[in-house]
Image (tube, rainbow, N blue to C red):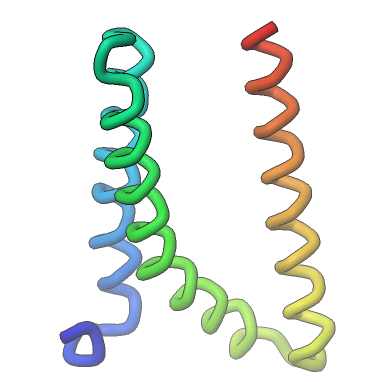
Length: 96
């Protein structure tokens, strides 16, 4: 099904899915009785949306640069890990 869509279209499909997952996570924080189901459903939607959109963005990054593909892949991975680290630390700081 995905291979029939235009290349950038999956990014536009994945973004609302990730936003919906984020809103479900926030609802779980507000209503503590539903925290675990909201956590599971929200994280599942975020991961699914990221999966269908990140592969296209990764391919765009690899193919749009004249630098070797290994260098581009390493740079994208470092940026991704840095953003994950920053968000985890920000949430940890806000939580404590």
